[in-house]
Image (cartoon, rainbow, N blue to C red; front, side):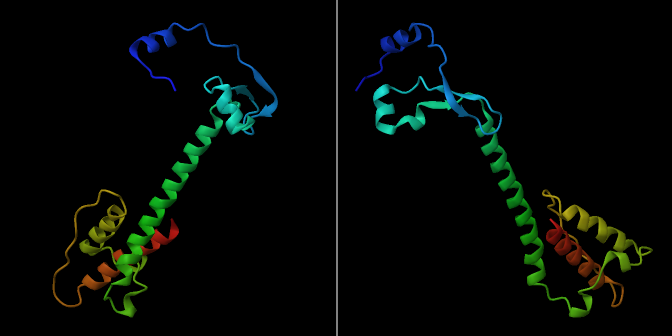
Length: 162
C-alpha cells in the first residue's frame, strides 16, 4: 500500500512521458469501429486479479455518449408519463356527469368569451410552469360545466397522446 504525499504527487507529475498507445489487435468499438487501447491506469497485479477484460479500454467516447443518450431518453419517457398521470389524476376524481364526457372545444361556441379563455387556459396548463387556476361563475345554463369538461377532456387526451 502506498501513501500519497505532496512529494509523491510532485514525483508523479515529473514522471516520464506517457507510454505509447498499444492497440488491441481484434477488439474494436461496436459503434464507431475505433480500436481499444491498453489501459495504463491499472497495475499489472490488478489486471491479473480482474482478468484481461479491463486491460483494454475503448479509445473513443461512444459508449459514454450512448449511456448519456439512453438516460436522456428515459428522462423524456418519465416526463411524458408524469404528464399522462397528471391528466388521469384529474379525470379519476372528477364529479362531472357522464353527459359531459364528450365535451370538446371543437363543439364549443366561441362567440362566448369564456370558451376562448377556457381553451387558452387548457393549452397553458399542459406547460410545466402553469401555476394559476381558473374559476367560472354565473347563472345556470351559461356553459360553466361544459367549459370545465372541455378543459378536463383536452388535458386527459393530451396526456394520452404523449
